[in-house]
Length: 447
Image (cartoon, rainbow, N blue to C red):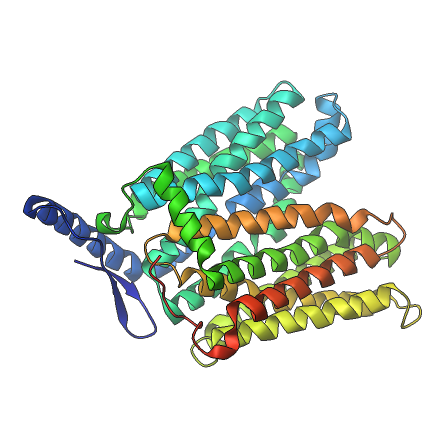
């Protein structure tokens, strides 16, 4: 029995390995039939599934960005230095990066529901402990656990999407998912600021705890298992490492993984440097910066929707991805030329326009990169999702501090990091994915 996936107007079967006995075949066949039925029912409630998976992918940005307005208050409340309080961000980010490497293979072995529910439960407990942490040391430790557990939401959300959809349908789903998950970084600081108007920094973690409980309840009730027993891995750590090794040995998958990682680095450079660049160098007020930041996010989301509703199914995904990477490179070059004074003194408007173009291009770059990587996996979507997520987080984390290496009086480091990251991404795409051969676009693999 095969678990059917939604494709571009067709269904694609995914069949497990041979059974060892008639009884085993009967048991596995019945379990697989149950999973296939649940999968079909899940697809029929596609709006609810999209909202739920979007909520799961929003957990990391909510955990990070809702907390940002509270940093000065945490410094005073726990009598800690600013550098020590910054560790609460670093450890959470590191936990989310490394946790994906653990949770992804677990979901390939035990299915999606059990690791997801376990991760969400631990996330809720760790977040509640953050709210009552009496010292900065305990807060840092709890934030690490929060990040490790929160990784389950984003990595398994991608794996569930791969279980349910394939090919063009997967690309369209990721573009729709971006509409929901893309809103989270915009509204999270606003929510955090409003929470701080009625309570202190601990109230932010109380809100996150409640959100975690709600997500856990909805997953428990509404999200069935999407990975059939026949498609699971029976091995332990060795099998998980073997799956990742086989994925990394696939040149095309690794190419898309690196493309996504370095494109994410360009995005991270923008997020970390743009508040300083636009306010301190180009004179934008905090209100103007917030407006421009939101406008750029709207551009990213809008292009994601154009990608899913207009381009997917009409234009090859690798061609769309190549166009997106080329636009990012051109925008980064324009930013570097403006930052170095080649065009003379430029104001805020040209810089904001270049950043808008760069961010909008990410709306067709990120979902198509994930789609083209995941369609090359068949029985290891969890491990593949983990590698994609961890690479993006780690490369982005490395790129973030580089934007400030030249001090506070120039935007050159941000533009250089963005350009170098975009050029490396484009180079990996052309050199490793080889889109010109016509054989890499939406061609499923057997890993």
